[in-house]
Image (cartoon, rainbow, N blue to C red; front, side):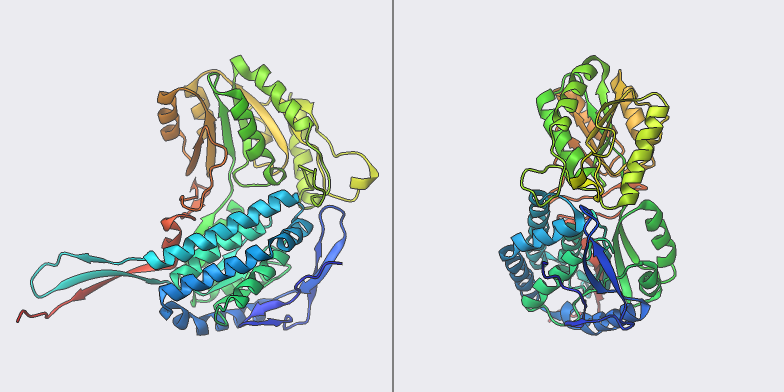
Length: 486
């Protein structure tokens, strides 16, 4: 059995939960128990907040060059251990090893990016209103922060938030998803080994978010909460955070349209679709959920999608040739099945997949075949709700105006994609789509130097680029008066 970290990381040490309780971490590929780990409650979280608050002033006062050095050292330690960390991530989450390696590599790129941004949090001098005054605006760390992260990208989401917070001078408490806490504990270890002062980073694992969320949201010492997850939970956090006027950074649900115009490069559009649709078995907030194909090319493009998805091997993520691993749990499979069943009942046709794979080897895991649906309409559940699974529903359209209206007809606005060779259309559609992130002939939209985030009910704030520091820093205006000339 692999070795896993099992304790809470608080105030620079590994600790059992105060109650002594533990919970099981399950391998979604076969339903087996990987390990039991500490199960925190509100008392543990308050202990972590105490520790973070104690460390906050010292970390904020640490020179930016030193903060930068520690972040770069932590990334170096993690990269040296990346194969083992990727195995841990695959075992707890299910994604193929190659994808786990890609996730961790990309996450560490954020640590290194923000290590450099720590050195560039410049202030500004402003022309004053008189000769006896000087006006200065400086940036300072907001204070203790909390990252509440999801199970679909357990390492990336922590590293992206953690890099920005630590670079800005904020202590951070990480509350990972109960389904995937093991990689979070490993990340805590890397930063401790890099020399991060005690209390600046805590990792608090809990089987039920409700056991610790009240302590987080009601404590005025917690100044920033960065959450990635569902829109429903994001709205709850907004209400609860209002009592202490917390700053909230919310990356919430999406329902991304993927539009293929008749003048697109179909080979390129296909490869980009497969990448963005099947990454993490479709369990991403930027996954292509509504695939709009212009009617004149719909038959040809659908044939290519069916051919490509039907060739993908389903199995354990630890096997080198597997492209499609398990979904996270039984509930995820049930949701996919219900969306497919509703589509079929309302006139859609299964062109590929449409069921759980057969065979004893996969019987105990949460697997679902890559699936293509044709004849899909806007009235079906799959057109309104995020499926979060390996299902590619094909919607047909006739005109540019029509598809923009249909693509925007959603409360969500995280990511959108479209493909065309028409330069004028590239500009028109990019500006017309009501989404925070748009891929124009591009399905790989995320980059460490770019601002990632949504509009409408998909969230508040941006992660990545120099914008990623904004949620963790306050702008202080200093008016210096009474100055005299010699």
